[in-house]
Length: 410
Ligand SMILES: *Cc1c(COP(=O)(O)O)cnc(C)c1O
Image (cartoon, rainbow, N blue to C red):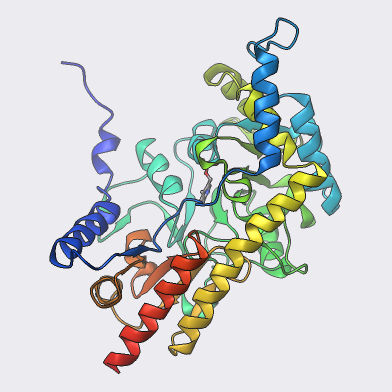
């Protein structure tokens, strides 16, 4: 018999979403007349923007002609898209990123999961707690950790997001090599300001570490004082890789397009101390394992940067942010503290009781499904995540039901 990669056996089975599903169906069986509302969703709910659909249709029709047919494209993405990205997402923010530093892909999940494979096996990795599980599990699979003990893997440095630090972890006391950060954050919705990000960039420089910056939710930032790319921070081009996605801004979760920025000056060393270009390594990996995003999908992504596309994306994110505001004010009315929802689609509620207890209360007494924070890490205990990805009507009704249920109890 062939042998397996035993690192997979270290993975802690995630019962989070199956546990939620079990409790939801038990509730539905017991209360067949009570419709439930799901505010646990990490997926967008509104339709694909018209501008993107028009570009998709046009590209599909072009593919049906001999002149407009496209076979394999460049693995890194078409120039038309890389140029639009560089100009609109970076140069317009004063960040000096060149189109050649952008790698178009089919998802920020794969990119943020795959990036670790170009780094050494025995490096020290810092991950947030609570966390988007991809960063953790991909390093476990690669064998960079020991076993899971009391919900934490041996070998990681955990960056704690708690009420005490406003859910923005500060730099660790020890030296690490790779740091995963995500702002606006999933699951907490917290956003890092310029000074907080600058502290991370300075720390990374001081220990010659890299920051892997997941900015999948950047389109939800409304506070103009907040950085919208890590490359707005001085020195970041020497230490940071940024992941972006069209999933949450333009509703591409089912269409699939994202990109990763690797500045050409980023250097990492081999065991003899000689420097190597990280851009060149990732390019090698990308061209070996990936054959490009489809032409119609890249045309649809390019349309996001047209004037009409920009206004549709603004309207779409405004819509979810208005939902978030409704959630946030209801939570505050109940006297609970929370973070997020102002520059992000997630509201992280400090439940002041165990996550699952609060989850059960909201499910059984209000018929509303949320996500228990404990499922995202030790520091998520005592919290729940409420998502603004839903219809206005559902969000309004859900929050009304929660208010009724919790005030009736008090
Ligand atoms: C949704 C999400 C992404 C985007 O992933 P895609 O694969 O591009 O759909 C990336 N990071 C985080 C934290 C997310 O929540």
